[in-house]
Amino acid sequence: MNWISISLIGYLLLAVCFILDKFLLKKSIPKPSVYAFYMAILSSGVLVLIPFGVQWVSFGFFLRSIVFGIIFIWALVYFYKAVKKNQISKVAPLVGTITQITTFFLAVIFFDKGIEMINYAGLFFLIAGGFLVSFDLPLNYKSLTNGLAFSMESGILLAIAYSGFDYVYQEFKIVSGNQNVFINGFFWTRIGLILGGFSLLLVNKYRIEIKKSIFGKHKKHKESRSLKTIALFILNKIFGGTSSILINHAILLGGAVFVQAVSSVQFVFVLVLATAMSIKHPDIFGEKLYFWDWAQKIGAIALIAGGIVLVSL
Image (tube, rainbow, N blue to C red; front, side):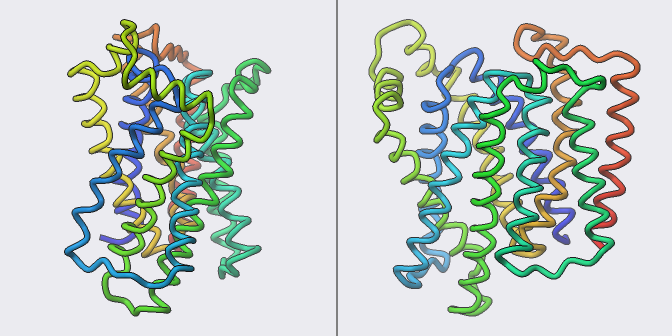
């Protein structure tokens, strides 16, 4: 499969993760810091890759991989905070659009990416489509600003992290050749995710929240450790881990700027899934779309589809 096909599958799985994230954050694991910490710890599963070609490159390569992995975890903390504040069908597209724009400028300014005019047009369509999926017209001030700061922080940090992952893959190619590029880039950045989880313990508020979640005797703390919650969380992270592998592989093949541009398609997946889930769980998802809302979303989908075609040329 080419990088576009891999990206689309990865973003579909990521959309499922977003829906489960919203459900768990609302019902079982209400603290974003705790949620991000558990996610980071589960990344330790990457250790199974050690026998399959993982190698030491240099301390500089190790340090860069770790830093970008840590940035990714903190981006997730802010993303989960935004999800707590607003509907997932609004937060995910907004974060994604900010990530796209930031990744694009990072690629042009720092990584000297060669981008044709038709690709610029594709990026514009994708960003416009993402905006129309995110916000209902006419714009509602409260809807627009609810959790906006957290969304912006998350989007910017995600762009830095994904651009950094792209840089790590390319650096490994230059230093060690084309063999085991993905395994090494993915492994060392996931080690950064694990350390990023432990870095949350350096913040007193987060440390207390994480400690209570693990050892607390209150009903809400026990709920976060229940078998049902653990099973759903692990299932979610299996989807998330698979999505991460696919998206990172797509970045290796196509570059971060274009893979992030295609991420607009996940907004469509999130919208459809969140609308379906709101029928059974209106208190959690609260998606209420009328005729003109759907007309706007369908127009946004058309823009996204056109954008995907243009960025692939």
